[in-house]
Image (tube, rainbow, N blue to C red; front, side, top):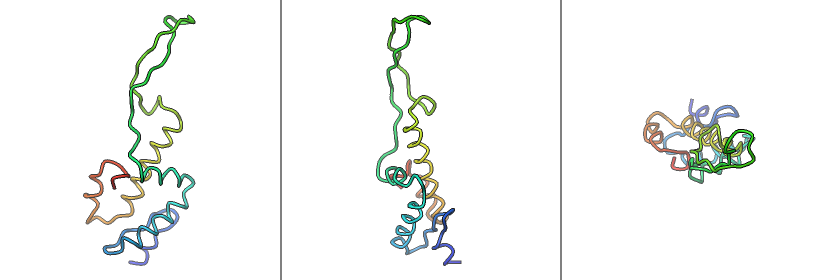
Length: 119
């Protein structure tokens, strides 16, 4: 059972066993390296998550007009760039990798962290 917990696999991250943090950290890095988006996962683990902001957009004063006005809007998942959506998706994936790789005795403590960087 312990060997299975420590080994993990390509489809499942290794489990953190009590007292084996150094080995787990090494194994979790190797697991992340198997992911096609590993660079973005590492970025999410080292940096705070993306924060939606207010943005400006030029819109026609009336439909079909070349005259424009600036409209202010709050970013959300649907109106940000694909790169930003990719970052948001990977942030969720990084959190899932960490939470899947920990035991129940520390799950609540780690799950209380607001993002992967703080985990």
